[in-house]
Length: 581
Image (spheres, rainbow, N blue to C red):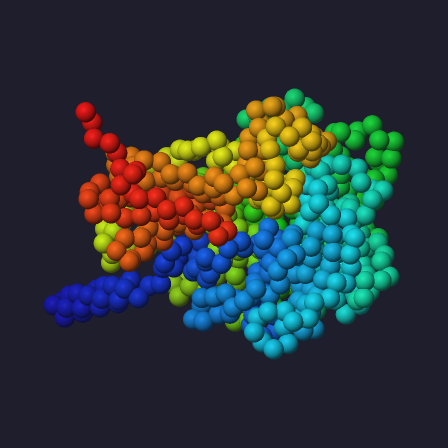
């Protein structure tokens, strides 16, 4: 009996020691600097790239080079990896506003502008294109959905552009369609129609099947009397579509959504039944308003996802509850070759519904890991297999409580917040940021993060009657409520601030708890400098926040906000609370 007791005691001690050792070596689900994303067990998310400017679509070349499109600045940049981190190598191409879609094929990077298709290549390995060829020009461009797709195959290339508005009848134009061309831009022929906004096309590996994710339309319930905050129909209809596009296929937009459901605006069309009969329903449907932009098929076994698709859902604006904002797996049946389910890999919404980022595209790296872009923060994140397969989906990041600044040894002594410290509310500090907030919530889904009324650099004025009418006409398509004058003022205030780049930042005073809060336009870099040492302040969307001790040490520091070559420098002593009289 004594021997048994000794054996049990020793066994329990051994198990406890093994558990403790396992806990010490357990790999966290989130790497340093990653916000409090929710991650499916078995996966890990790390920060792959930051401080590289705008980040939208991603594409790998045949030598490990990562290409990143920057449509607002008109550039594509190249990055190379070292130890899981990607650093900028060079500007591959510049001077091509709206550069967006990309596909690497046979040594060339094919890419699109809103109204053109190009191909370029780097022959000396310096990361810069030294050959540039325009393949197709004078294609439809601009409008509410200006993003042009590109897919290159052994038989030619495919390209498309979406609806200029929300749900408009453009059957008689070249929009809302996929067109196929010969490699030299000749031989244009219609491939498929009835698309709303398919930003990326790809072949399913091992087949010649063309697939794409199409955005569902907005304001579906407006004709039933829905109002802001009361939209029980629009919140759920229509779904986002993952389509297998076939030659001659019609996919319903704008007349038919989802599985053969007519939009009410078109109920009186005499050919509505004919349109419904020929509509091809989505191969898989996702929840309404997720806004899947980029996606990829998986060919590696590294993450156990081979044969499936992974999607970057940019997130909603036309939904009472925030939805999307995630990286999603679409499971394919290996026998039928059809989708059979979906599951979350990474969610960028926290438990309170706060948006921690906006996934825009996802690609498979040469080592089988996944990279996804976040165009709200200007970052790229990496998904790998985690060492601990039993980790909770909601495992918190180490130190990933807002605002989670990275501590450094510096004259600027910044305490690391703990979970018990509440994050302060973000207070919109100026009309520019009220405008930005309105624009991103109400306009960006269709018009992009930066709008499309005018090209960068154009001088605009809120009172310009022509501009007001142009913006109003863009915003008030079928199914869209008219803009009030106050709403129009907000949109135009943002346009003016963006084009002139001033003012591009606003900073509040310290709160009594020691929080300094501010805002800056997308693409800004914020840091604090004191005594030759610096501390980067991460941005969340267009907001940032950091906590300081209210003492003389902090009063000697300076805040820097930089954007597109312009810089604001603010002595922090100017922001310290004034002593009470």
